[in-house]
Image (cartoon, rainbow, N blue to C red; front, side):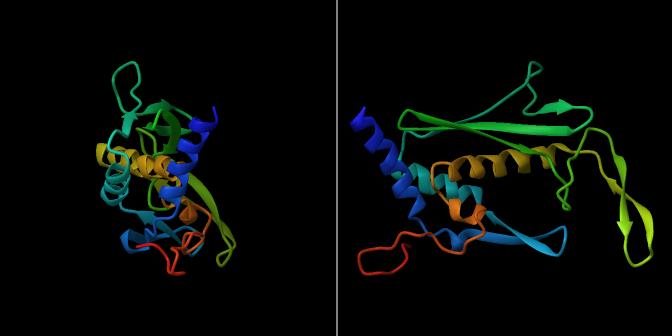
Amino acid sequence: MEEKQSVKDSVFNQLSGINVNGHTEKKPSGNNRELTYLSWPFAWAEVKKRFPDATYTIYRDEKNRPYIEDPDFGLMCYTTVTINEQTHEMWLPVMNGANKSMKRQPYAYKVWNGFKKQWEDKYVEAASMFDINKTIMRCLVKNLAMFGLGLYIYAGEDLPETETEDGQQPA
């Protein structure tokens, strides 16, 4: 058990020490905030360099679709990642640019406009396969963060906590 735990710790320690900042993008989100996204090809490449046997799986429903659907809440994608016999699962809703859940049909919702002092309609387009594909790959990156890669991004931090022996951030 002790040896298995040290293997799991070493996966997290190796991946959490990687500075991913040069491979992120910032995109506007609701409430004048920006969200940071890590490039999935970079994330997967960094994992495979260190753990060549790493695998991921995209969950598919009974109709072989890469998402599940709830008519009230929208579409959700799931992935699992396995590294050194440790598996983490992750999920992510399919969302539009305002981070509103997307469904197979367009829909409207109301928001309060404080300047006009009235309720206004906002609209969410129907999800496309492109939206679903983006969500799957973002879910994969979120899944890899559970193993340590870029986890600090989700905490709103700028740099990983670990440093190299010379006190510099890892490349």
